Length: 101
Image (cartoon, rainbow, N blue to C red; front, side, top):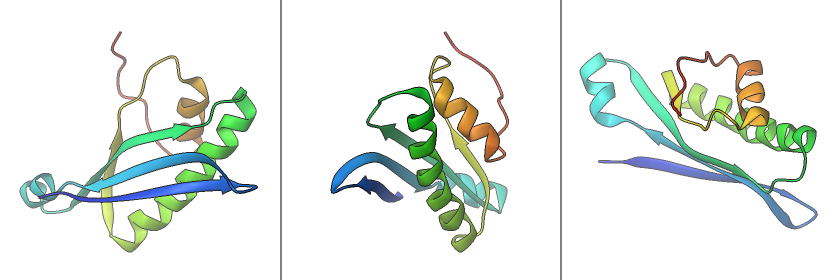
């Protein structure tokens, strides 16, 4: 059982980023609270500041989705060298747990 929603941000009729959110039904039932993950978040890379702006637009939608779905825990896996995403996630309240190389 998977419930996933995808969101796209568009500028001047051009897709700039896409994100997939999944409500984790099994985990939610085990922990008795809604748990979700960002399965992917991809931007049309240009430069650091622009990428952060696009990530922020997608994460604003993410915030609304989590509130609407009463999500208590949200996780994401990302590459440690994707600094524009990591820095944007931190501004949205994400905590860095660990790094894999």
